[in-house]
Image (cartoon, rainbow, N blue to C red):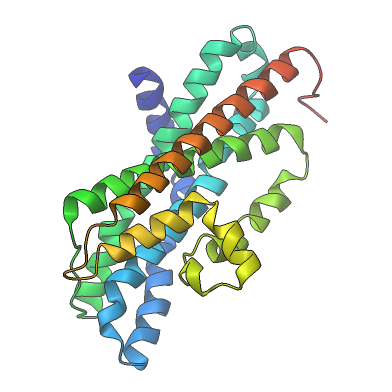
Length: 251
């Protein structure tokens, strides 16, 4: 598995265009932090950096990590890989997870921009729990990327769906505003989405003197596990269908 991850990361860094979603983060930060400065809410800088980080991670997963299956199809390597679907599913999962993990340093990038470009006082509260939450979020986002990978194989117009999976998710995932501020029907939908719990846990950890949100962290863990399981099973099912000839790999 380490060989799969190392090989994929080597190929990824040879194509800098694949890292474009991560390079967009400073633009998000400039906009968000400028608004904070204009309205004199510098105390929200850390929470804003967290929101920008989660948005970048999701975009990176949807537009980069989720395309590994589609890339294999266009390069002509997907069809031969169907000879060993079990091994290919495992290798593909490792590639998606390793690609998604590239977004983890973006949190530090956002905090550094807030501190040194805008002079905001930023601190990451409860670093161990924050890191655990970031890792859980990365795993959950990678699981979601597996589902998007399935769409890339099944639906020819999946690239349109990729665009539809950005801003609605930013809203329902509580990345722009806390899920608790959404209208009642949307709030219930958001509560079933692991990103909203991740955003809430990370924000709660930044409140000085507040108890650790261990209950919410537990819910996040369960939702992430469910997301990964669904993504893995869906991918295996789709690849089995492809091998049986139920899905055409080419137009």
